[in-house]
Length: 221
Length: 166
Image 1 (cartoon, chains in turn purple, cyan):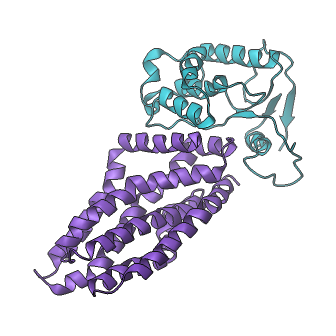
Image 2 (cartoon, helix red, strand yellow):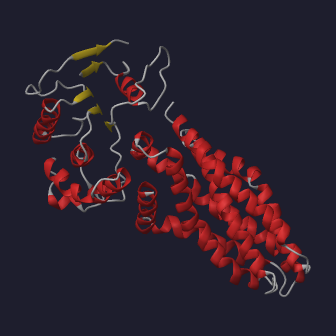
């Protein structure tokens, strides 16, 4: 637990030192969503229909911006070697780093989503569903993306491979997340897609730290 | 033990295999089920460039469950100047970075040290400081496997030299 807290604190401290890196995802998210709003006709009702997809895809792409550096910086400066040799299981280390990534990248997007959704014409009754979906889905993006980042950390051009591998893997979360908002917009029960999202999150939380740790160990071979 | 050999002879690779960082390309490595706790100082210093030496070492103390009060004495032991301790590591010289990395050896006693080119970047004083630290470790019953292009300081006790051939 101490090791997890130490990694978490370090991630926050590093985010304070390299602010531009961590401010980029919320900035990118806001700009992309706003550009969609500006590009459509004023008061176009279709915009509200497309809003869930716009917000989810923007959140997905924004999260990808910081994923490549998640483990690469530690590999480059030798920290990863020490983390591998420590008494703390590498899966715990990976989990702490992935949770830190979500707090710094995913959580700000969840908080920004509500005002941006209202700006796109999403009814206020559907906004809580959108926020709940992103609160469940963005950790999935950090976890799945973190696994791929671990898998590609030792590759010279791993950054190019990262989106190509993450985007197909995260498609189920995107489908259930946007589906939940669409259901809420039509006055239907959004519970089922949100439960599926929660199931994906639990599965990712259970499995990904272990497979990511195995991938990180392979970076040295 | 001092591992010597030409560039590319496999000194660092052997050390990484001994540490458990990588699998041997051929042959078998037999590992004690209860291995000795080890300190590893590789080519890379394991210091984040955006953090200071103190912040980096504080992290390693917290991560390994040691008291953070050990940081200042460790940096004193490696004679890192006070002015360099709170500056971002990226602004330090290569020798100061190496001293900060070697200070990790002082944070907690561990019987086995695996050190890859520990003298890289160190000046004469730095080499003397490292030699006294290593002597203390060896005289206290510790084991060290060191790769180095340079001859190790003469005052070190019981150094066995192994030369790797390509």
